[in-house]
Image (cartoon, rainbow, N blue to C red; front, side, top):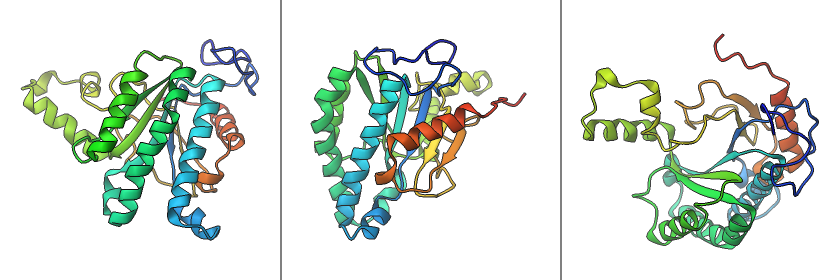
Length: 249
């Protein structure tokens, strides 16, 4: 990829890109997954199966993004508000994330995916935190694609935590700039999102990266997450590429 455009092959050379030379690829895609429970209900399946199918589909589109030359991909797995769901559902989700991260660890390592965690750590169950730390450690040297898993993440919470860090370190507020503030966010070192996709027809971002997403482009997909195919991801990228980004100018 050169100057934001693909040359027809992914950086690893393993898969031909479906995009032509004139298509501008987003460097950082954020996926706000929604509709797992509604999808399960519509298909007469238990809620847990909707979550499992949704996670697997998110992995599928992440794989496509990696093959097509996207460098950063963020999946919002669990928000700070999701703790308000039933204890049974929360317990299932925590165990599902452990299972899925363990299942896909070797894939991450072999495909060059570097996994990072965005969000709070103090409320995540110990068994899941242990797996997250293991995955982060074992993929630390990978550089083909950075996969941010936002788990117990909320944009407002992220900003409050950043301010607390600044106060604890005794920073001079008169010397604080936007660039300096970014260093205290969970996304430090990650470029701001170019394209934010939300599934299930909901047209809001619910607090996903409110500071970082000032100039992000949004794409709202009507279908639920388990039905969000790689072809739909391709359609979202083509829509993004056709837009003219002005960045306030």
